Image (cartoon, rainbow, N blue to C red; front, side, top):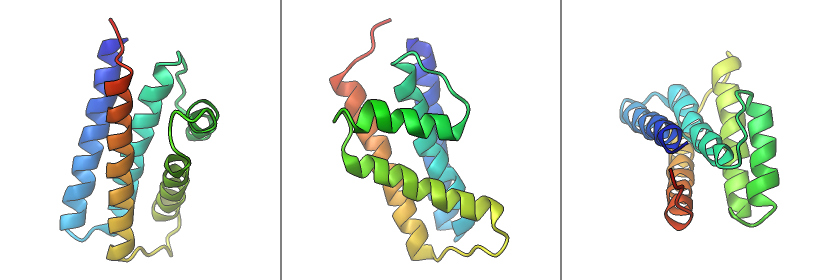
Length: 130
């Protein structure tokens, strides 16, 4: 399981790096996608520690709230970050009329950084053994 955890965390790192690169290039809509996916990969790795594997975003979001937010392992704000970024990504990816100001994109990027940090802190406090 530890190899899978490292793989998901690597994907989260890459998505976050992509979001930073897109921010620097002024690509707000694409940033919304990569910021959300950085969070999504974090959620997937957290669920993996509970032996839950899902590729569906809805299922992953519901299980994260159920197992990590409602139990107090993650703060309520983490759930808000997830939902905010999911909505922004949906709009950016599927609404052809969607616009995202650069200052709004910065908030999404900061959200992704925060969620990523919370995930790394969780693993530091709850190490996974081989």
